[in-house]
Image (cartoon, rainbow, N blue to C red; front, side):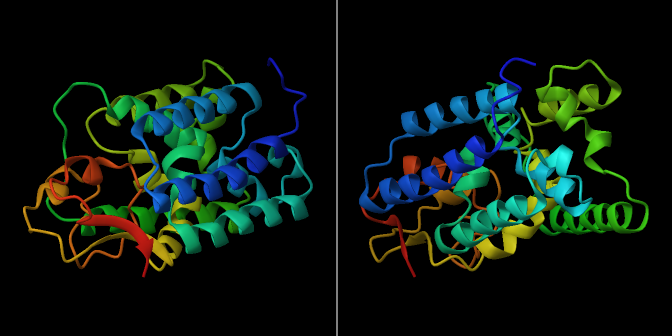
Length: 255
């Protein structure tokens, strides 16, 4: 593969640096959606060029103690994924939202001009995620098998035509109508990051300027825009802030 010799650590360094930059832009009010689009394109391109940052696969390799699949010493993988977890605990899910190549391609496809499907309740999505995470753990620790090999994430980014890559292409097609199915239902690292994001120090919140028009709730693809939502599944996509009619009613700030 082109540029296969480029260390995967470059991808993680890019992600870690960009989390801080994105958080600053959001906090300072300088964030623009065109910046988000640029990051999605860059992150997706890195997935194809150096297969990094693709945290779900690299998390899988780490759990399986597969240094070759990880593309780095195991201790480096632990350090990189731990830093992203800590940054998510502080700033929210910017990594998932803009910097993970697997999430990036799904976000891009979701913009396809087709009708969207959003479950009326979040509980079933959460149940499926937990069940998939349990399957991931059982396969990894008991059977030493890779769950993500079934979903072809590596084959897809390596442009290999396999049954697995075909499965991931189907997931991408589904992501045109259902927001980030891989991230929300399958990704084991996303399952780890979600609780951290739900307790993040910085997050989107409504202020006294909010007029309760519920436009943010209607446009949120993960149903995380209500006042009482913990924002664990908020990918900071910016759809809510784009439709908010009151300046300063919805802000990214420290709680």
